[in-house]
Picture 1 (tube, rainbow, N blue to C red):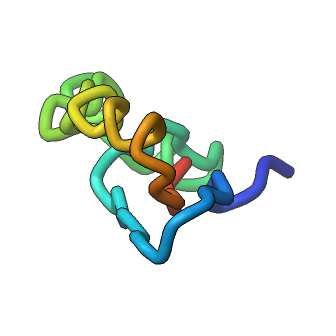
Picture 2 (cartoon, one colour):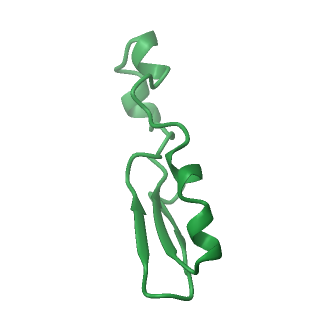
Length: 66
């Protein structure tokens, strides 16, 4: 099973949490969803990319995978 989140350890005391970036869907939930739901239309597809610049500033990240 894939980890529920990804962690990037930075070098400064700045932590950025990205809870809405997860795009993985467990099979047991996928089976219960409609075709539209399985397309994940309410996903914030690029929110982690919006904060990518902060890695250069030494920020740490916790990014949701699901």
